[in-house]
Length: 297
Image (cartoon, rainbow, N blue to C red; front, side, top):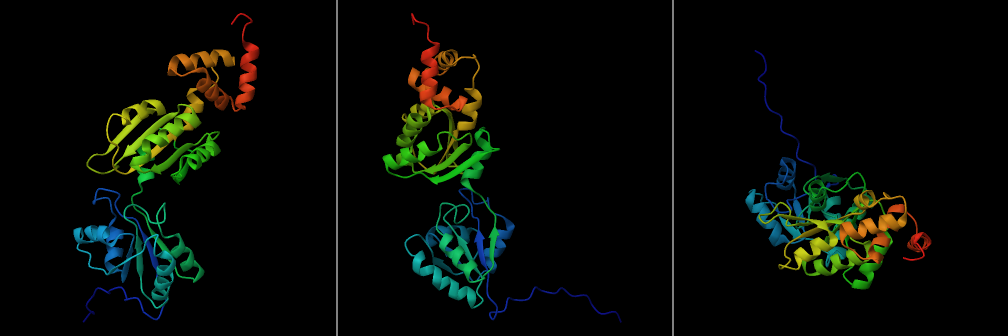
């Protein structure tokens, strides 16, 4: 008689071997934005380290996941990370999740990942939703080259300095911002970067998802008309600015006049855009502009 075929279950990981650290992406809003692999991994893990256990529990309840949770956030990671490493070395499989999106990306987790690698513990990424990637895809700005800045400094002086450091970039800038600082930050973008194309992506994947597109000054005026709420991703099209404001008239004076007319900006702002598009210092653009002026102008 031929032997009966039977299904062979995957072996249960031995507690004698080191466990694995799983970096699990979770939804950024819509609870359906999670992979089958992420759900299975969360169910099979021995422990889930959460930025906020209460918030993660809502997701776990939605998918009937009963794995034990523990807090892991910016205020306790210095002591919690070594504790989790001990459990991993004893064979536990641990998932790291943030409140939303991919852990470690502008969220706690770097210390734990680095420590796990130092202790030769496998670190396994389980890809998932990411707010800045979703915003980039729908923004309508050039994305062949972009620069992710995380959160800009909260203080005005430091924030303006950070923008000064990237103002000559030809890449699309992407960063997160708190709603109560959105107006001030866009004002700094307008001041430091001229009036580039801007997209403010608010509440991506959530019920009140919104994309505000236009120049920095246009988007700023629209945001002033209503309370700014929710999770915000800001995208600044410096690459698009260089394309749209590039030399067209042949002289700096002609480009300057064109930009002032098309964008309704003053000479100072227009000169900054022309200098950036021509990739020359503003002082040099000003010198050439002065030399191009007719004596009677």
